[in-house]
Amino acid sequence: MTREGFGGSVRPAWFRSSFSNGAGGECVECALTGDGVLVRDSKAPKAHRIAVGSRAWRDFVHAMK
Image (tube, rainbow, N blue to C red; front, side, top):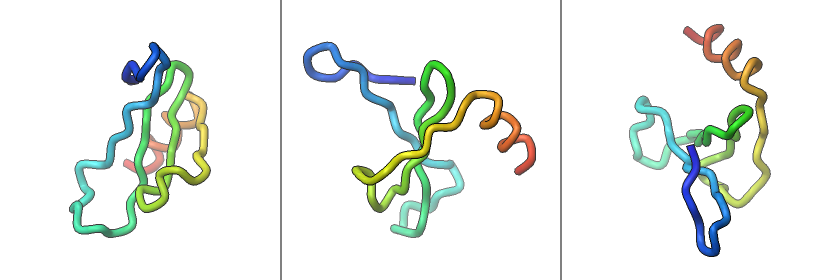
């Protein structure tokens, strides 16, 4: 899931979990890419991001259920 940015560049469309209460608590944001998922700290969106491959992300989500 991406959005077209200025000049045709593609930027990630970040989203938070539906379990996030929006009250400024600690939360992560995710963005789907063509080959996996990007993960970042919602309180520091310009800081480092973690890139996770599709298979590793699927395994992680499955383990959390």
